[in-house]
Image (tube, helix red, strand yellow):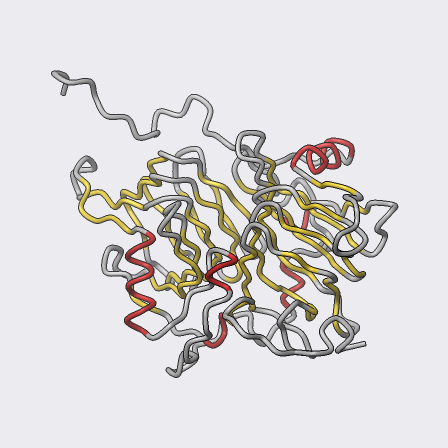
Length: 358
């Protein structure tokens, strides 16, 4: 069973995931106190992904999202003291910050680690709240990774075929959740009621409060649908994957972080990949089968950036296509309150005054 998905394990390129528990924390000069584990950086789109760490009491002030960002708190707690994001984000909370949003403060109530996908640069304002003092881009993340000897996850199928470079050889710094039962981040919590905290917020949500949606045709695969973009076709999910996903193509890219269990994956070892491993599936990637390895629930986060096409084998006709349309229909049918994509009527959005006006 453990080797059935990949009986001839022989990876030739650098495709697959990165075990974030084996990576170091790198300081970010643009934002004192912020540490990150770099995962991916795109020179084409400017998108970059990382796991961040903010020590207790650290505050990021004057933060401007020139591109959108999604995040999931893995441990600790973050607070947005004011603005549309106002509230407390504890472990298992997933959020989305629209592009051009200006965040007055983001504070760490405790030592906090979170997964972040930035769709464009981050700018840090000077104390006057107007001048841009620093900018963090995909190129900065790529340069930091290269300097530390870290190989980032490939962005395209062509990059996946390149020879595998030497693995990172420095000291490993595991995530805070590395030795815990991390599926508790997203499973239904007993006693979680509407009267306790802010379960559902326009721009973030406690994923424990989101119901599992099960397709009768795929009873072993369940979804927590978090956000759907009709503009980009992106869907953000939590997946409980205890069955076998049949042959399929990723017509759009996807990324995911394993929270629980082990996944059997093309070009992966027979024992599969476990908690803390982060993947990026480039557009066009094909899987003849993806499945759980072992008895533990396989649970992972997922951003799906385009449709997935299913068939019954290489060269066979298309059997089904799953896109944002189907995900949104499932969410609406289940009464799920999806995270919002924009800040409606928000005065904190970045907007420069017209020429000639102060």
